[in-house]
Image (cartoon, rainbow, N blue to C red; front, side, top):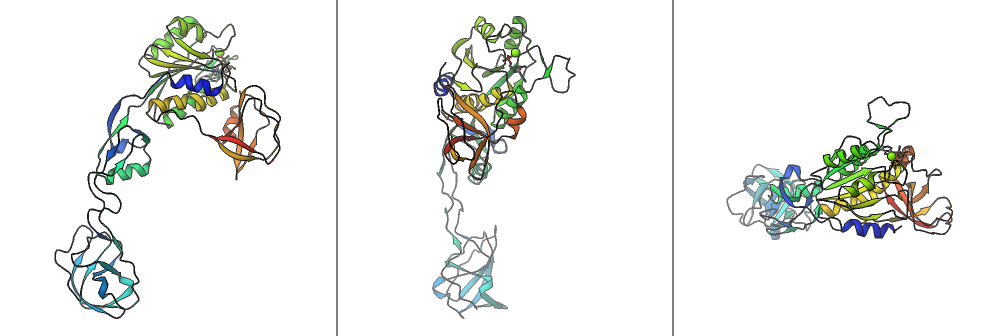
Length: 390
Ligand code: AMP
Ligand code: MG
């Protein structure tokens, strides 16, 4: 058995970043920027008013000073002339500051009678002007790689970048294996259960910008597993679920091997999820997840998601643990790294009593995985422990 960190290192060696493609800005959110892009203009492109008021010369902006209003500047409609001594231009937010003016007195600080305005309240030192290029200037970079947030998309739009270079979406084939499984919505026989793992994993992987294809359930026969692997052709990553243990009906390892899988490792010192295998199958990486639903989902977070982030061009990023205070004591951990289903609330973390790896209700109620290192000693309440938010 190898450690979680060793397994991750082996997994990262199985794949590199995929190619770049260009997508319209409207499709860019959640994708990974693959090349650094640069603003094609200054923003704002001119000094602009940040308030509604009167543009004039700052040295003249004394209490009770009077100005003749000589024109108007609104957003999208600048004032073409020059502001001279004793003159002001009526101005609105977003309008270019007219030549000759270097301050905007807000409209609340003046009184107006016809074309004459009088400063009636102390206008203070603020100019109320946003300088040209104050947000960014032409050439300002948005650095790759990064997963594009909605905020990034707004910035790219402002930079006038209508098409964005991103890493192609990894395609993942998800194969449930087992004679006992039927799809949600079907009527199971008396010995059957509903396949859940492929659906949870599809949601996880599509939530991180991958394309996940659920293949037909493979039965516990060599022929059926071979057919499933054939159907996975073209995927960047093949994920099987179940059949990875050492029982008589656990055929995934043997069939994958017979079909040319070069195995990188099998079995890790981890709870839940000991029988995990990985390797390469032709053009694709292959990960064989354990069948127990909690094991499959936890291994999805700990191994599959980081591997896919590497394919997306984000480099090698293991899950980063945070720290919180234990609300209840914990017994000593065994020889395997334990990812305990837990609840984190107001900086305090509590593990559920029942950690059986088949219990999806417990996983669904959890919002964190409390991480225990191999042989971690017993912990008292109030001690700090590692957790991974879910
Ligand atoms: P296995 O690794 O095939 O022995 O499966 C371990 C346990 O997980 C068994 O109880 C299976 O019925 C269950 N299991 C396997 N695959 C799935 C799946 N896709 N969805 C839900 N349960 C599964
Ligand atoms: Mg099975």
